Image: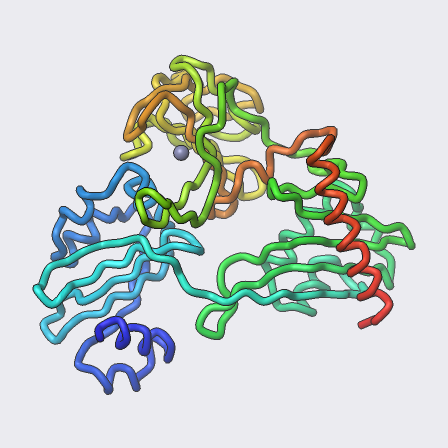
Length: 378
Ligand SMILES: [Zn+2]
């Protein structure tokens, strides 16, 4: 019954007066503050601290990752006690705290419900690349992402009137509103009758229609490793644990003491212990990127607070924090949102072998769709 109430209120807008009047219970929006921890949140709301201490190592790290500015929803009873709370962990999963009829609290990791919508976009340019996209779509992150994608192949100062852009992407919708980040599957820019293509590969990186990488600013793999023990995912169902998990990085398993290098040039902005991540280094890079290196055994103290080059020694691989064996947890964020590092670790020569063959099928399919849209016109 409580869930139905909460869903009702969420559906009709958290701030809706109607919802306040229909129920004695109150829903409030709460903005996650910078540096706020789950433990502090529980304390503040008089929730049992065991909810935090009972988290397993992976969920503890997710709780560590809650972005400042995240909007949480709290449903309270007439005594101002928490009935339910929803705390988004990323675009896919949220912490769900519930009080049952015996006044006992439990917490689980639940999927966030949303719909996806396939979008096609055709623009004929008459002004500035990102401005034209923004005018046509009102989607600022899309304009920024397209500019980033094409910046190595196109000189934006040499745009011609009538140049064309075709984009295929997926949009997420939640409660009738645009939600999260879009996913671009294919994009084509026609500059003076020459066509530049980019297609998303299953590794998340973009390659052109010859399966060549165009991203010259790509990040490097930060260490030698024996195997990748865990990949990036925003949502995965764990069949044995029977729960949802997310993993905001790549785990490179290898021997303790393996040198860890900066994946790209930047400034070391954190070198210390960070909860379940153990000994951690964070580097800030140009264009809104940050990298995180966790479970380290030792720091290279000489680079503390310094600007480092790509490939500079920053620390050594280890097993600190809540880790089940020596490995490097490598995280990459863009504007404080975790993204798949494999998206930016692209191989200069592009794809080959079976990977290339699979990719070329995608190229063929989308090239057809792009031509179709160009024929149809605006
Ligand atoms: Zn990890």
